[in-house]
Image: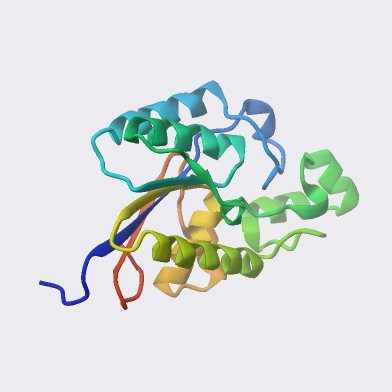
Length: 200
């Protein structure tokens, strides 16, 4: 038996697929809508979580994450809360841009951007280190607020990658290697006084 006391678990979930027009654009923390598939993915995941005990449900506040958070919170008899520190990576000057706009501004950058993802330095955008700092802050606050209990956080691809890299001690340059599908999940847990660990 652990001497550290009750286990705190944070279940991180990525939102469902976004609407088709945004698949070929850079959106980051813009508030873009889910597609019909994304809504179905959200409903399916929420249905699968029926019967699970959550003491809190949070989202980034963006509509694509709030949709799932509200579904899960409603069936758990809770009210979904918002913490904007869980928002997706800010894409700066390129937010909302497609290939033509990126290529006009910086020839050759489109392919580099998609190859490197969050590691690519977008003008005016947030760095992965900045993202990880706010995610780490949110993680510690949620862990303290829900110590010994379970909470679901609906967030975004790069948010989950930043959290996982922190917990595993991986350099952020390796974060694009972490596969985080739509409606994918990662569970972090710890006992009081111990470090976070990735369990799923």
